[in-house]
Length: 610
Image (cartoon, rainbow, N blue to C red; front, side, top):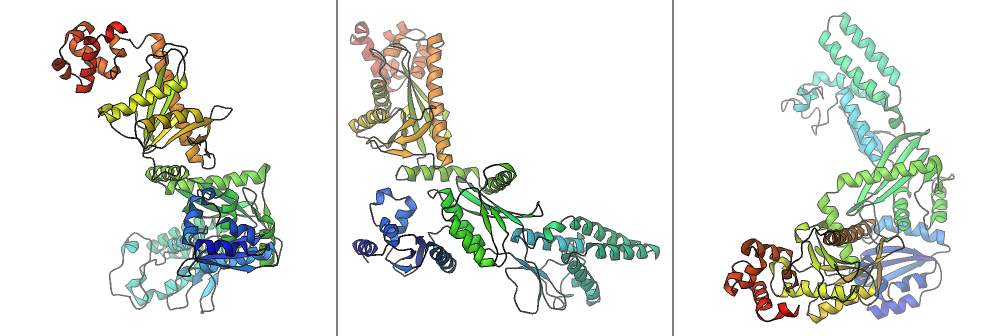
């Protein structure tokens, strides 16, 4: 269907609740959503794309046709949406990496039974234990049992592979009893498995009693090596006993959901509490959903995590109000046949649990994300926010500082790949100013900077991907005017401050404001750039006022900054010697364009005029 046909179809939809299913040209479902009023919600996709997020624009560009299913209520639409997302896994819906459920421990039915993790219990003759709180903790239980009872963790199959190869490294390290050595160890394997089953069923004292008696009997019979092995096994099982609460966490009394939105990755965490104590943690890392509100993101993750489970906690704490919290509460309650509460605490002990879950989410993101990934994702987000062609690898920021007609200065601060690049910082002392005028000062600074870029000056040889001007709309209009005059195409934005003198938004030369507070990492970066630019300008201004920076007649020459002045004075020693130097002598010290400017200044009457 054409875009106009899609738009007409959307406008013809009824004002009733339901679900819409977006599909591409291959009829693949790419997005599933619910709506209180289908006509209003679906029509929004086919209106002016300028108001859409980057993700929405990308999704709309892929839509070839869509279907709708009308429901009797918003609640029914929510249930249907969850079912369709589970079935189709659409690429533009926020999805967990795995369709998670409470897992089980499976004990296979064979000559040498093995423990493994299973997503659900099946009628296959095997024995199942659980369900447990999370996949992560369940796998930890299996690993702990194998270690404590020295059960095999290799891929060998017994008795088929007995005697085919030498025992592996786990046997020599004392982590496995080496059942691959012979059939005579089958009874020992069965005994270890039986002890593992007892542990899973919570009969720790029985296992401890039996092992203690066997160890004492071996010691009395002078079988000291076997007694030592039994002693080590007993210690490992006692250590495992301390994890009884984790193993017994087949049903959590309370779940606490946490979420952290990182620069490159985000994390959804669920802490499972049993009888007031933390029993297990489950988490999932996902690509950061930059544009969605936190409540909408959490709602999607909560639905995918909990919908379809046969057992749920009676209380789930969430860090913020969900947009569909009431129908979601009803759906989960009907799903399990008892009341499940979704609670958003504001203070007290429950709020402390939310903070703990959020902290866990943050730590998982920080462990999984490298500094380079964070920087790249941050710059990518900023580039998309400002509709740039790509991430702004080099950013230049400008600020003016003055206390009157004299000592008006400007700073140029450079950030490369999201970090300060101090080697390229520059300072400007404003010339020929009748008094403080921020707009005229900014125009002079930017003109001087980019004329030197066009002239090939190595100090200003890199072209920025983005200009950030300290000030509002009028300041950035000055920057746009200078760039247009010099025929340069560089995006420029003003940094608009709030009442606390913090950057709250970026403003385009046409007056459009782009809020940056929705993405904390971008907000922090722009604020840092603004503070650094202001600090660099103020520092130079104070140095001038204190007389720490010596001025010279050379400072009045266009193209001669602090570095060139120092080069000339270092070589010629005095201004008088510079004045007497020939053009060729000057060119031996500074670039040709700077040498010509100095020579012309002293030999064309400009000095007397100044």
